[in-house]
Length: 233
Image 1 (cartoon, rainbow, N blue to C red):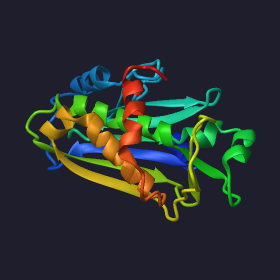
Image 2 (cartoon, one colour; image 1 turned 60 degrees about the horizontal axis):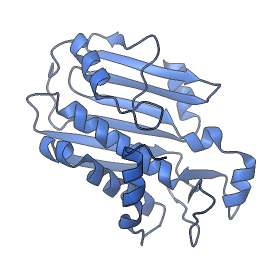
Image 3 (cartoon, rainbow, N blue to C red; image 1 turned 30 degrees about the horizontal axis):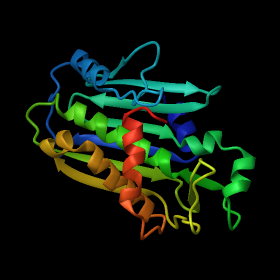
Image 4 (cartoon, one colour; image 1 turned 45 degrees about the vertical axis):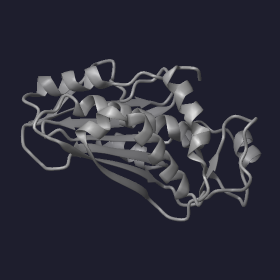
């Protein structure tokens, strides 16, 4: 899997970590239970599950972990995840924009010779999937009352926010000036289970602010997230 992870890291990518705030061995009683938790917790909102489970199913990765991956050049889509009996979930996946954005689209939205982009709406979708998945996972892990959720965006420096939709635009260019973007949250199990969508939207706004969009209005994206849950994409 090292070659796949290196491929993912060769361009812009996300890294997501969900884990109990206090380390404990064997919070999940068995590897079969690990598989079951992920299978029952995956999120299906846009034709691609979060996280993706390979057609050959989830496999044992080590003495205390299971994993799955996607190495699909035709789509393209590259991702890899691992889930441990400690309750830790680690996920790497490529930024869709770096894999699928055409030169015509880049020319349409670019300013200042920028060549890397991050979709605003796709970011909301991805972060929403992360927290919805987290809410399902943590509900199945006993003996842990708080969890740390870390979202990292790598190769963020000199990357610009944009809308895929030609009918939406920004008043100016919003560009990240450092790398990587790291958002860390320590939340109670109750918070994660009871309000994942609200937390996700707050985190997405935090990400946009890292692109110097300091006056972003959270409210304008509430409807986008609602449409996502209702599969009105």
